[in-house]
Image 1 (cartoon, helix red, strand yellow):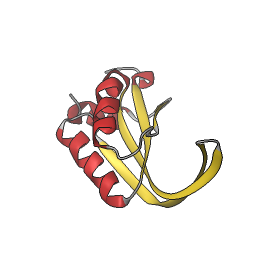
Image 2 (image 1 turned 90 degrees about the vertical axis):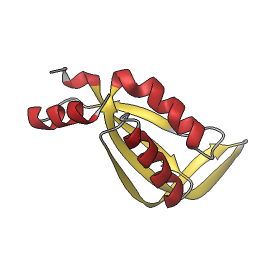
Image 3 (image 1 turned 135 degrees about the vertical axis):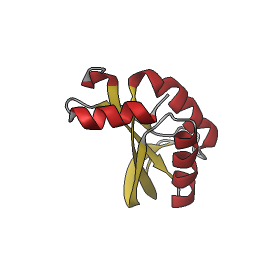
Image 4 (image 1 turned 90 degrees about the horizontal axis):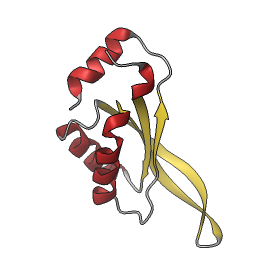
Length: 108
């Protein structure tokens, strides 16, 4: 079994629930993620084109492995409506062995 540093939670925001669901379904089909949680709507505040903007978005938390991040990020970019989508991988620093085994069973 891999060390926990090899596993990540990938954070992506989407413009609407339909976009988030489309991204999650495709990444699941490609076995790039084991699971996705879609939370929202959430209020997001950010800098864009020299101004402070805000938007209602849907937050996705997806579980994967670090070695799959490049393919995962490319797939998100291809499906996403944003010019610069948020795609961030956070390390899983600890987990139960059974959860990590389940992750491995679900992924490429």
